[in-house]
Image (cartoon, rainbow over all chains, first blue to last red; front, top):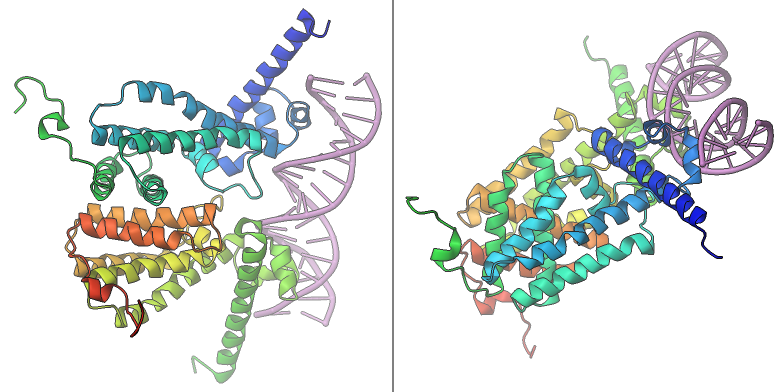
Length: 212
Length: 212
DNA sequence: GTCTATACACCGATAGAC
DNA sequence: GTCTATCGGTGTATAGAC
């Protein structure tokens, strides 16, 4: 008997504790700042002492690593729904795709810093934690490539535009929505440059009866 | 006698020591990482003990603050020369301006992180250190506005494109030059979008006699 | 005035008792 | 599995030597 019901329950409990620790770490990262995480604070938040965390994680970096994997994994899970109801108009679909990533990165500074910047000295995601981010990137390349035939170079410009505007949002307008129209403008610039047909005026904005 | 020659020499020596400390801090930031600076290491590099640094700087943050001011001040000093020999063709001039900032940010990761990212927990530049960066921004807005009549929104897209490509360089090709053509492509995209006339083909690349 | 010696509170991490 | 005790290292502060 390689797996007994008891072993199952133990593993389940261990996994639950791990998630509890990660939830506490996320909450503290959001409130105190990603780099301000301390093992003592995380432990206190789950009713433990700092050294006890080493039972569940190899090091503080391993906690960051698991958070990194969670963040990209959560985004990956949001993709099927996004793909399911993409507008049939390619340019509108492109706007939706760009906005989706923008919104996710803008909603949580700590998460964005962990996912897309290198703010934690010495942190390098493990291959397992990195895997979902690679899949997300490949998926994005494929989706955009299906909307319009572009070179890898132009796709890198696409990434740079979205990423640049996310950084500007966090630097100049955190929590605001000032950069939403800037994003739309930038997406149209890129779409024009790669030769996407412009959205027919009647389809540009869904209008209700009676709207002037 | 408000200022004696002796006072002059003392102030001079103090300023020299300050610069010596900052130089050592830059060297360590480049070799060990910006956030890995320790007062003990900086002090050792200039032949002192850590507490002695407090004679010259109020705190570690004050050192970062002075470095921040230096970095933007140095860039500001590079601008007159840039402006002096801008190509007369607006689009070529735009390329030159974008490339100038790109090159500066790409040449030194630690400096770029200090200038344009928020990787040091709790660091906020003082108004004095922040001033040169504001002047650089205003100058950039003015120069670009003279090359082409654009809205503030479009100028923010301009900033986002350059910043986004700088980040991609540091993430994917540090020390390389893979992103130079991507930058050129992106600048042309933006120039097209804001209605800049394209560079006449004969002026695009200076050719020597006999080049095929 | 400048620097050293010393100390403090905090950090991540480890050893070992229970 | 969790605890206490502790280690080396950090930024910071201050008393006192020269």
